[in-house]
Length: 115
Picture 1 (cartoon, rainbow, N blue to C red):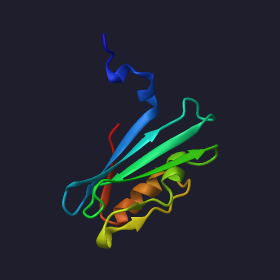
Picture 2 (picture 1 turned 120 degrees about the vertical axis):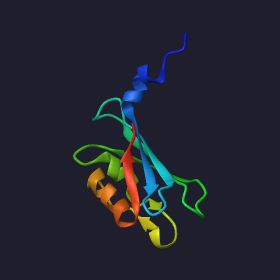
Picture 3 (picture 1 turned 45 degrees about the horizontal axis):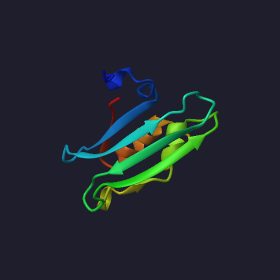
Picture 4 (picture 1 turned 180 degrees about the vertical axis):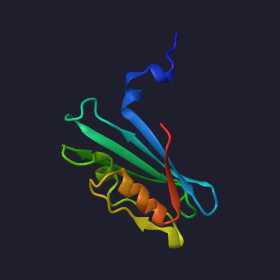
């Protein structure tokens, strides 16, 4: 018998955001996180896909280790997203996901937590 994915322990350590272009309402990208089994052990991994025109499924990867700061935003720091006048570079080294969400919003994107 195959277990449902919801019952797998690793799912408790994964999460996803979707990125929506607020001008067109279209799906523009996604961000996936994989947290370490223990908050103090290992690394958090992040992957960001950019589906905006001209990027054609561009993916960037990041990781963060240690403690005392927000690992999610640290792993995303320096990544590029968007195209044309909506293109930007994330400047969020450990400042938290509210800062990341605000930067997406400033450039016309909605960041929405999914899982």
